[in-house]
Length: 367
Ligand SMILES: NC(=O)c1ccc[n+]([C@@H]2O[C@H](COP(=O)([O-])OP(=O)(O)OC[C@H]3O[C@@H](n4cnc5c(N)ncnc54)[C@H](O)[C@@H]3O)[C@@H](O)[C@H]2O)c1
Image 1 (cartoon, rainbow, N blue to C red):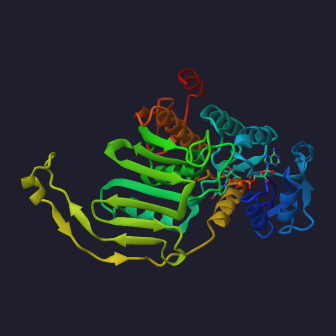
Image 2: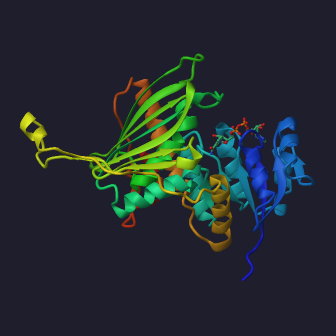
Image 3: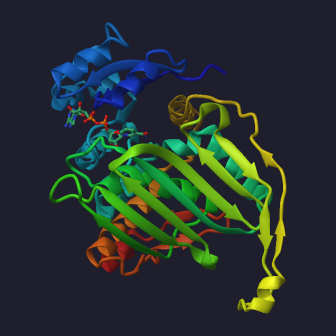
């Protein structure tokens, strides 16, 4: 059966949004019908990828032409995600919004519920869930190849780009939080974080974050706009294997180290216990991956979810979870690293491992 062509508008055509314009101008199953940006310069640059497409500088003008599109991609600055996405959902448009979904969990909660009530696709640009390296690591974890997962750590550093409306944690850590939640199939119970600003007053530009997941699993994330060395790395330590994801080496994104420490079953380590720890050496393998452009896979997934009525992998709820965690990061940073518990009680854990929103009212009351 022929699938319906999805007519898409892209809102926000800056550094990142123009990539969506480029892709949508070529992707089968969709038709790019409009692009919108307040900046004439960004609009002009983006339109080079899609000559002839309708251009809007005023978002209200685009909204006035709402019948011309079925779905929208929001790639504006984070502070505007909520109001733009809400308007789009109220107009019955499916939305793919960039990370972070909003700048508060109350706003994210509202959007998730709005999309649910209107039976619309709400997806968040957690792009690493569509990266073949992360997909590969997820398959190792789910099949038990890595053994028992002990902890994960991630580094995401570079010189800027420094954002105006969010700090470095809100800009960079959504990627790693989304990766950790996805890989572990769970959300953290508590957060401890410290941060500082070295580049300018007011907004944290480097942060060290610890996430405490159920069963004692730990996640550690270092993000920075102040480090001239660009690192994009996620490491998973399991009882059987250690696996490294390095997004800056395209030909060797994933490396598996079949080398582990088999811990003794005794709860406390004395010197005698220590001697019971067996160190093992093993192979180092870099699997050949089917490398594809993650953004293309993400957009294709969005279109397929609309066409086939599937639930998105990076749904609005996953975006809300990331924002709840970022709020805890901010709270802990204010307390100079004191652990902050996250209240997930408004959500119920379902047997399939996903957390589903159930009680919006309860959430509002407990906030
Ligand atoms: N997934 C990724 O790897 C990735 C990478 C970079 C940025 N991002 C995300 O993409 C979003 C945009 O980031 P960017 O780097 O492109 O920023 P940017 O500043 O380069 O672009 C944002 C654009 O949005 C436009 N804009 C803002 N408010 C608007 C409004 N109300 N109406 C119309 N246009 C409006 C601005 O004029 C600007 O051109 C952010 O949420 C960011 O976190 C994601």
